[in-house]
Image (cartoon, rainbow, N blue to C red; front, side):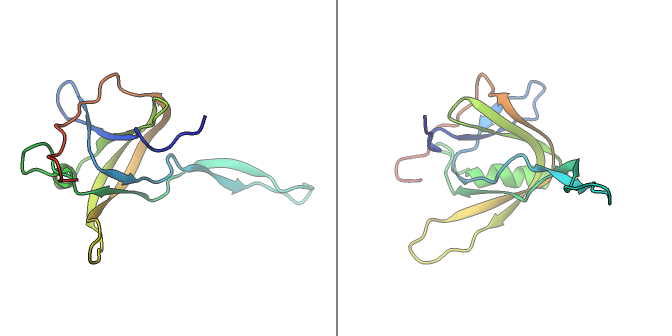
Length: 156
C-alpha cells in the first residue's frame, strides 16, 4: 500500500534523567537518512569486472525544513527549541517516525538557518544537522511521543 508523508513526526529526546521523546511540530522536508556506505575501489589488474569493498558510511547533508509554528498558547515557537539546542553546543538525539510505525534516530548538533522568502510566502527555516552520528534505521518508534499543545487556530 502506498503511503504519503501524512503522519510523519519529527521528535527529539529531552536531556532529563529519564529522556522523553517530544514532537517538534512543523516538519516540511527531510533528507534521506541514513547515508549510503561508501564504496572503495578494489579492482586489481587480473579482475575482469570492477570490484568494490564496503567503506565507511557516507552521511549526506542532513537539512530539515520547518514552517514556523507556535507551541500552544505560549509565545514560544518550534524554532526556539532548535536555537536552545544549538546554543547548548552538544549533541541531541532526534528521530523521524514514519506512518508505518518505524523510525530513524540519530544524534547531531543543530544549526538554525533562516530561509529566504518572498512576498506572500510561507515563512520557513532550515535546521542543518552537524556531526551526525549513531544513526539507526528501521527501529521501533518510541511508545509515547509527547505532543505539545496544538498551535492556536490560524497560527500555522
